[in-house]
Length: 381
Image (cartoon, rainbow, N blue to C red; front, top):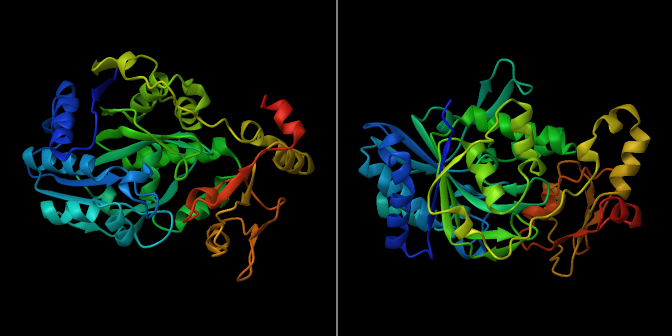
């Protein structure tokens, strides 16, 4: 079996013309866009649109990268090119306007798709029925245009994690409630979604990535490159290694390995990874020990609750809180109480540590308080 290929290309900034040429150079070792888009194909581009954020925030795929992919897909003879995503909350079209994706749609005369759910069944999967976007499932080719970011619960979000956007609207919050208390199970759910969507091509925007406490409130980090490949596990593994993160410490890659999807041998093409490694890239540690042993909560619930409460970071409103109450509406566990004009209050016992409130707060005002001294000692902080 041939080793999967991951291509890397240096890209200094988001100049639109330069990005087109950088993406063209990036795809050349993979056979060019024609290797993924056949003439007449219905192509859907799936960027990262986690919420209504500007391109400069580094929380969303930069519009120039999505634009370049659309241009090359048209050049390859696609019968139609469309774009779509479903943010965690809020109106997708408004969020796409702020991210400047709608600007790309208008310039290139491609439609923005409002995702509608359909049931996707997968025999033998631990998640045999998933509600996913019909527009992605019925496309001839999905091109996954992701963003390199850190993630409070999954450590990193790269190619595979971006497929969670196939879950439409508030169904994402329901999945956080069903599986978010156990990061290993949540990661396996994300892996099954990635397999169901099965993008033809993964392209990751790391011209300006996000490190620190992502995926929305971290720091923009000018890492200066793009990555691409046909195999999402290989792309994510290559990026983790490039950033000197052990792949087994990324829950989604651990879930892929558990499913037998392994990319130990990868052929890197294009620019050498060593020359692209940033001087600094801070990746958050896993935030709770419960995610490594969810059987504790099943067999000894009282002990599981104590571990979760004592050994994990707890969300709490920070100084920038606008007292808007969005976090209460977004909490899948119903662990946040709020009355107009007051600060939200957190129920430590009900909180499942999915960090949706931290991720989706419109002002990034939800802080993560460190665990108490037992947690800091056991986690080596």
